[in-house]
Length: 127
Length: 127
Image (spheres, rainbow over the protein chains, first blue to last red):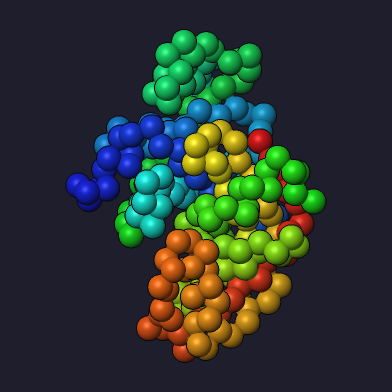
């Protein structure tokens, strides 16, 4: 599903940029930590923020990851939210924090409202 | 309008990631070259591609630029397409190519359908 010469972009701790659609049909984009298990993307988020409200209204998600050393090379993953899993201890946040280089990552103060956003992948575009 | 400690992100030749909304209300994100003149953002594009069709249907645009050296620092600019200016010689493409480090940038083969997308800025978010 992911071309071999682009898979490193998802394995390395690069920031992705996630697009969602607001209830008024305007677009929102945010840099995000992510984890890819070969089939789905996972993000840490909370139930209190705009992106969560966007996704309850419209599950469309699209993520771009580009190579910081060669930003004209990128992968775009299109899909939608399939699940929001409660993460009340912030364990997934801690896992992502460690993936992104913070060995001593602690659970965040808002762990009680943390969720893991699970995104399926309908289409992959590479450039 | 742009906080002083974030303006370098727009001045330096960083890639931005632009979000648009497709006619079916799913979201599209793409890395883009851009130029900021202190008020508007400008992008080079063509009339033949999906983003142009998206914008004719829904003018919402949002751009994220993050610091490649510190990607948790970013600026998000929200707005909409205000104008698409024909660029039949590809002159603006050449200007952006030079801004992004290609001193010998030539006009692209698709110059006849090139346009300059002009985006106003309604809201600035920094993080």
